[in-house]
Amino acid sequence: MTDSFIAPRRDNGSTPDSDTYRTLLRAAREVIRERGYNRATVEDIRRAAGVSRATFYFYFQDKRQVLVRLLSETTQQYIVLYKKRYSYTDDYSRIVLTHIEYFAHFARDSDIMIAAGSVASHDPAFREKVEEVRRGFRQRVERRIARLIANGTIPATNIEMLALILIGMVEHFTDEFFRRNTTDELVRANIAEAIRVLSETWYRALFVQEPPKAFPYEDFLREVDFHGPA
Image: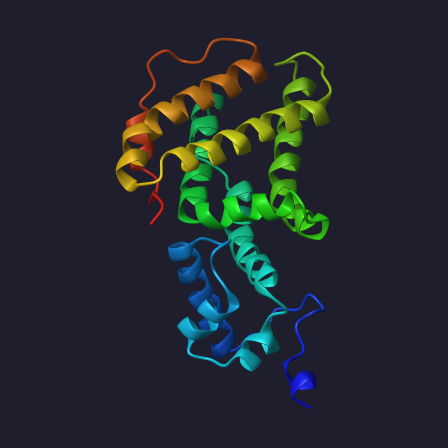
């Protein structure tokens, strides 16, 4: 009877809506933030939430599914980001702002994103969850490249491959940036230069021309709600 009760109930992809579920998710977020995903345990999470093991397993199959749910929460933020429209009309300003906001979102959940990448490397099912995050960005970039080709701004090219290259560059660089810059101080000291180099590289690769020489990166950074990792 006990085994039947504590068997994972949330294995059909549905997301429960209850105070207990939200409490568990918040507790898991704090435990992973403090201990790291690999060191965090189910016991740590359920104690932080003040619930029994049976209650934990009612809502989650295991620690991996906790990460899936946390990634899902983060995904919603990225969905908003890749649908955002900027008031700036010049291409370079839009590129810079997109990169700044990507960094800002990643910074707030850098531990989750890094853990997700690590788990996805050896877990095909989880890798598909990560791909859901990437898909929206890739499709937006593909549409942008297609428009530039259609109006003659850039020469014809393999749209899918170019989008993959650009998105892969941003993902890898952002991940590496937050692995190296692990405090607010380091992030603040290096973020402007990182955004400059990333944006200039993107612009050169896409438009095959030099980006603006004097660009107010610091001003743009102040316009965005940016917080480094805790």
